[in-house]
Length: 87
Picture: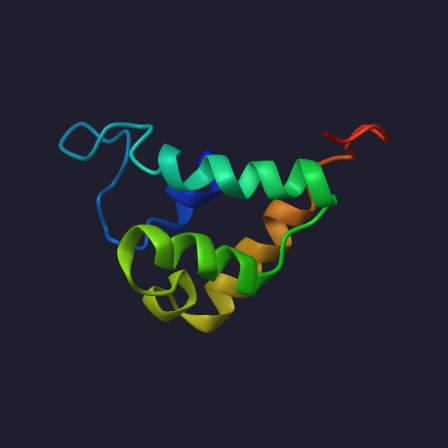
């Protein structure tokens, strides 16, 4: 998730780059997204936007090109498979 968020980089912070933000810049936002993926087995764009809005007061989809956001959602949902016993 963190790699995918860093690649999307909606604020142009360039996480991990020499003059950029720390590599884990988006970690706090990534954790609840990963939690949803593990618990439910997938995450929707609306769920991602709700998590992002809680932190920044705006949607992630609103910060990015629609095709890039759709690709991000597909990418993070392609991770897995998750164990059958979810907690």
